[in-house]
Length: 353
Image 1 (cartoon, one colour):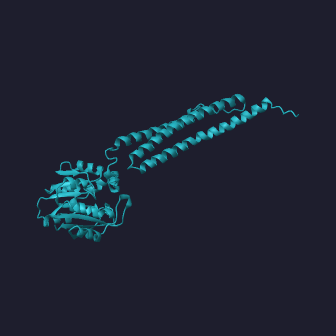
Image 2: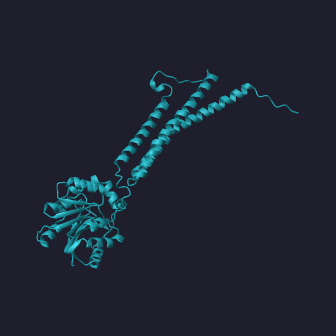
Image 3: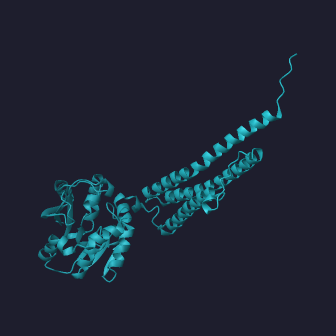
């Protein structure tokens, strides 16, 4: 029987030294990966938040993950550095002559400065995410969540960009934008004070102008943020404000009487092709016999980001005829915001009934 060779204590000690040395290197590598993980995690989640502006629940979930993720990384780096410190202490006791402590007099050469720097960054990222979570929670109009009108892509776009759009819209006078409407009011209705509904009123610029001319005006707008701006900007004008949307106009058709004039300015291109017949049917119920619909058509390329579809005068004429309207073309004008590939065609639909 052959005896096994004896394992000397020095051999075991050497193996332990090598193993601990490799363990330290692995832990050190992991610790330096944590800031990269944090930046990737936080940056990715924040980018996701910016892309789901219409989903507050999803935004809050992403920000919560960013907050908790960085907090967990804080604890991970705390544990890693503790194990590294115990390993360093063992290596120093095992071979003090060969150990490099790298201690210095300046603050950045003190022990744990790297860990504390990393942890400070993680705390900042976690607190920032938490702050954004709180802001998102309290700035979300929870009454709008689940509102059917929020499913409308155009309304969602105008809600997101209400302030920027309001400034450009209010910078153009309604009289300059709608000379055809002014002629319609003066020629067909002889300057009488009329009942007018402005569907898709936006910032209320046109509604306020019509009210200033002495007309009784109802302004309908589907985008909640835009409607709030309109109410505030024109709070002194005698305008009735209503939240409603094409193609159904459920609130307007249920609660309002008929009108002498229906105004659809820069609205028709937001109605999907398959919804336009229903939209004309809804509008027809709001027009008095002998009344009129003033409409502007955006002639130019579609813009899916803004839920803008291509429209044509021929299509509108066909729909108008089917619902008993007589269409009269008015002027064609360049875009007042200077977009060269866009022109505006205005028309009036006369209710022959």
